[in-house]
Length: 259
Image (tube, rainbow, N blue to C red; front, side, top):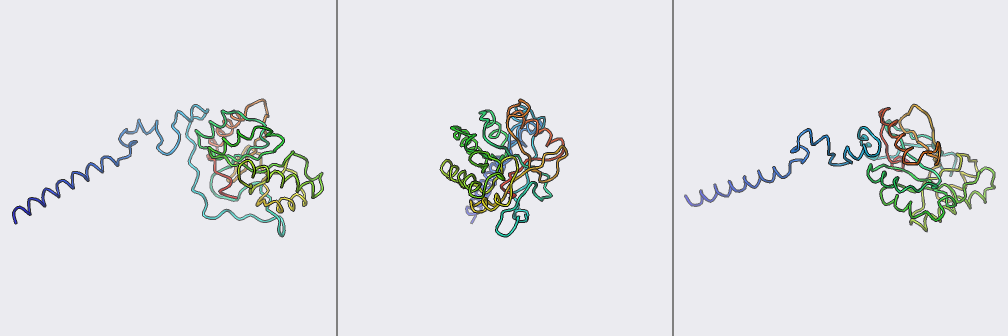
């Protein structure tokens, strides 16, 4: 009886020791480093040095969790996709969208990867040319690829068949390149008519995405980056906009989570 009691005590002592060791190992490494370390390391995101390297003076706030339901949007008519220039949400988020595909700066790929930026690329086949591999690299680091027609025409100047060829043709190009058929479409110059909406619906498009460019941001704003403006690179333009987003108390979310 006495031996059994000693064995029990030893077993309990060893179990307690193992438990304490396990607790020590499970302590967040940031807590072990103290406040000084916590300022330098973000366990689930880029380091402060990474933000500084890309011209930001503070970390981007994390985006809210993906909505359980996408915000409601109104279709343009029976059987037609909605036309959206802003997402109706109370989340203090905006969306980064880039057009055409002319600029293929490898630094932008690094920026998207290191900052984990959710960006949407609306591509035009004739502008991208032989540069699809660049956008494959962007997709690999989290960017989404969407439709911006084959040749960037003024769509209302084309008949329905011509518009359908432009939109469906780019759907097929992107399917061949990336194995996807985009849900979102941006008409060149932001111009469209009823035939555009009909053609987009026939090509499997779920929403027409426009934008609102304004100094004062609002929740759900869709920001539009035409390439090559002001002589700045896409990377420089993105840094400038990210600083404006932070100053106004917003962060960046993934457009495809909301549409």
